[in-house]
Image (cartoon, rainbow, N blue to C red):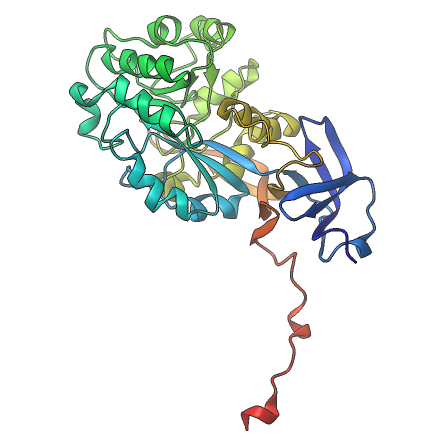
Length: 391
């Protein structure tokens, strides 16, 4: 009788919650982590994967991606599972009028765990609609969130171009009524500064995404992190990477990281445009943080445990015994690589000597992506056809 369904052997386990960073075996039964130990007998498992030279970590959690509403959105499984991401947060693709459609067509059909921020615009992330204040109903938005707290975790406010705080104020009211948070994507314009946004319109637990965007500069003319960013962090505002196709600039990220201003959460803002222009999947974003000097252990934490806490899902983001068996097996690959940023000034490259690549993804105990066939036997073991029944 085999005790385990799947055994991961000889990998380097990084689990920030349980303060593990070392060589451990990980055994899985059904959908749960069954045992963590320095060595587990491989004969006790139905299937064994040799993870020598690889990193075993919790399934990655992407706090900002797009699977609905936005014209460039991607179905969750294609966008997430090949890259070790087992949980994603749709960043405002739907509003209170359209979430049920998103749930039926996308969420319920995905292997990936999909949660959502509800756009303050009732119609969702439709560009022309995001300017219509009359479609920003905080009462209806909060009511839908309270109705589906299992899937809806907060409010998204984005792309509002008028010289007013109306969208932010309505989003903040919806978050207060539903006891959730807002994620904000707003460029500064005359009369509506980033300083006022961060210090006067956001509260502890709210999230500013696109933190290293060229269009909302975190770095001042002297090359220092703006004081009001530092003050906002002291006030409990969270800062999310939100890479995207136009919202991550090395010219902002490198000096900020050199000064110790790291992201609270690493996320992709993944959609077709960002995938095609600068490959902003989770390992790619993590690779950029690695090459900019953030330690690997912190990168794993900001891609797993930290976003699980923002989402209010303590069962995710770690691999303790009895926890959900969402696992990514990663590998650091050495070589010569070009990592690409973006922004209003175009794309530019950071030369890198190593990158992080996902090798295998496990969701709820099931292998859902296997890049190099780690879980398969050699093709030479293919059984021969029953030639007698063919001819």
